[in-house]
Every structure is written in C-alpha cells, then in structure tokens.
Length: 408
View 1 (cartoon, one colour):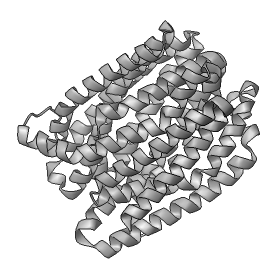
View 2: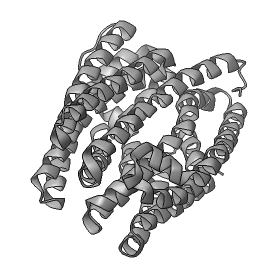
View 3: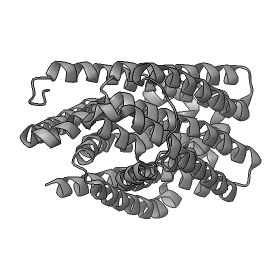
View 4: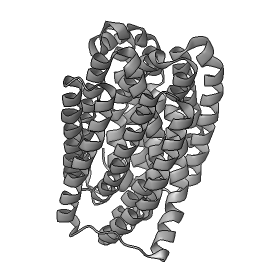
C-alpha cells in the first residue's frame, strides 16, 4: 500500500505499530472472558451494562477532540504542544459534564445499588481514559506510532493485572470496577510522563480564540461520535432494561468477540487518518487512490475473519466464556454476517474525517441509530439478543451506504 509519495515503507511501519496497539485489545478480551467466568452470567450482565452505558457517555467527555488533534497535528506538527495544552483545558468542561450525565442516567435506568455504583466507577475510569486519548492524538498526529503503541499496551496491561487481581481476590463486581479506576489512573500517569518527553512538557492552556477554533472543528465530529457510540451500544442497554442481565451478558459475550474482530480495520484506519489528511491538501488523486485501497483491503480482511467466525461460533464462544455462554453463538453468527459492512465503515470514517466532511459523519450515524433503535424496539422483545444482532447488522449496512453516497 502506498500513498503516492514514495513513503510506503513508513506507512507499513506505522501500520505495524498500530497493529500492536490493536492486538493489545486482546488483553481486554482476556479480562472480559475472565470476568465472565468469575462473575457468572447475572453479575457479568451487570458489569456489561455498566461498561456499555459508560462507553456511550465517554464520547461526551472527548467530543471529537481526539480526531481533531490527530488531523491538526498531522498538518502542522509545530502546534502539537499548544494544541495539547488547550485540549487538556477544554476537557475539564467536557469530561465533567459527561460524567454528570452518566451518573444521572445510570440512576434513572437502574434501581439496583450495585449496578449504579458499577456505572459510577466505570465513569470515573473513563474520564481518565478520555485524557489519555488526547495524549494519544498528539502522538498519532506526529506519526509516532511506536510510542502510541507503548501507551496503549501499558494501559491495557495495567488494566488486566489490576482487574485480574481483583477477580482472583473474590471482590466481585465492586472490586472489578474499582480496579478500573486505579488502573486508568496509573496508565494516565505513564502516558503523561511519555508525552512530556516527546513534546517538551504538558500543561493546560486557556485562550478563548483557540478554544473557539477547536470547538468549531470538533463539533461535527463530536456529534458524530456521540451518535455512533449510542448506536453501537444502545442495544446492550435496551437488552438490560427489556430482557434482564442474563441475556445482556450473553449478547455482551457475542458483541465483544465481534468487536475484537473489528480491530483489524482499526489498524488501517488509525494509520490512514493522518496520511489521508495530509494528502487531501497536497495530492487529491493520491488521496482518492489510498482511500480506495484502504476500503478494498478492509473488506478483504472482513471475508477472512467472518467465515471461520461464523462456522466455529459455538466452539469459539464456549472456549472463551465457558459452556454457560453457548447460547451467545447464535447472535455472534448474525454479527459475523455484518463484518464486511463494519470493516468498510472504519475506512470510510477515516476518509470523511480527512476531507473535513463532519456533517456527513453525523448524517450517517444518525441514520444508522434511528434504524437500529427502531428495529431493536420491535426485535428485542421477540428475539432478544438475536434481534439486537440483526438490528446492528442492518444499521451498519445503512450507515455504510450513506457514507458512500456522500463521498461520491
């Protein structure tokens, strides 16, 4: 794969580093699997609900600034330190507001005290993860993917060690969610130390004009990401409310495994976003060529991943989560059918970001969300987790279609 500038070697090197970052997500899957085995289906369902609900509100804490940082630093690396400082200051407002919204929503949706506390603690850990995303955005914009991989790997290793220790100690749901807060605090410290070495210091900055500029750039991306995360995880929240924790746990096992498959196109998208952003300014034909190659490569990867996933769904889910989670194989098979759509969407998102068409992202995400929720309202009461999986696949197909039409 080349971008038309003769820098294919650096592109593949960056992709290798991004691959390490994506592969480290396997550590999170390991923790998720261990949690399922230690907690049992009911408690695991509660944990999954807290995690999915928290992930929906995580985008309010970042609100598109991660993507803006990548794009702007890629275009002018000299601004990296200043952009980082201003964004860290802005995050005080967005992270605080997102956390409050999460606390209120969790309190309204669930009456069980243990579920509420789990949501609160997960929310606290996500505030720190949001700050870490800003730091990673600078590293990615500078195309220092090696150091970015180090930050990601450190974060996930610390989380697995702390979470695994909490589960092994028998602390249950409460201990596991407390370990998330502790692990993310340690990981943020590591990321801050590394970034200080790379850009010459970290500190919050406040400038009304710069903040206005950053908000103007981030607004369409932030709206898109809020809707996208709502679209991605609303089915789990609806299952928790409409069908209970046990079925939520089954669907979470299927969805997290499916999500693990989708880390493959995220590698391509992470590398292509800064490269496409730069090419859009200096070489439009090369930009188009690289985008098309990226989409084709991601769809080819989807075919490779989906076929064995569909065929071996039952033994795979049983191997990972244990015999009690065998029913998760059915929704997982449905999700595998949608892998080509989600793989293509990853690269289409990177392409849209590179050409500053934030409104197209919002349009595609809102359309997919409306379709997803409408189908879930009808399908979840009738088919449970399988119905939620069907809604996800149809929503991805619709979102992909909107993006393609908007880019033509």
